[in-house]
Length: 102
Image (cartoon, rainbow, N blue to C red; front, side, top):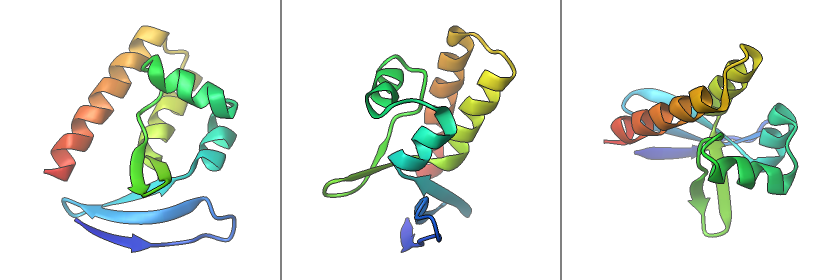
């Protein structure tokens, strides 16, 4: 997997990784918080509860989230999905992540 650094004006998208011929955009916690309206600790509580995808380590002291995974969770919330439905979606997204990285 090749990694490339990409910085947008607002600094939202920091890294692009090519996995199985698919471009994957990573977002940092500040952007994740904007998209979900969760506090910093709220993000981690939601992640621990299985309601947000887990973060990915992108450096020694840096983590990020896969943009399309976060977007899918936000869209599910907009559609009115229950917590159980969102948990199932997160499990499916993370399973897909493993397949794409193989």
